[in-house]
Image 1 (cartoon, rainbow, N blue to C red):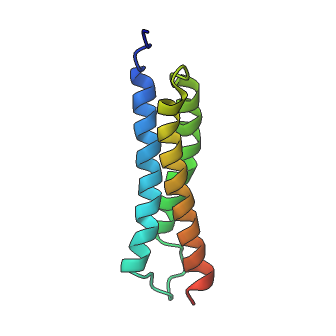
Image 2 (image 1 turned 30 degrees about the horizontal axis):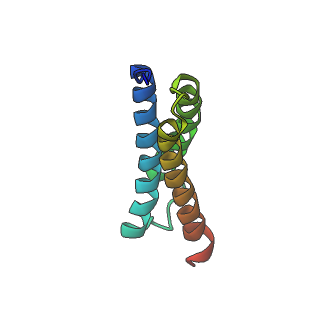
Length: 102
């Protein structure tokens, strides 16, 4: 049984998806270690990094979904599951920081 080789472009987009979701998660986790200054008038760099990471995650994910080798769905779904888990965890922690930690 021969399997099609993984496309290099799918590997790159899977790496981008994973990296962007982890950047979003690490950005939120950094707020637990270094809390933001409440006197700031701007959201700060961390908020902008988080927004950019999640904003770029959407096109990277769509690109991966279009280029992945779906003849092996379990293997193709791993990067999607990892990215979705990290992004959901980041959003949940952000909700906690914004609404429940006060």
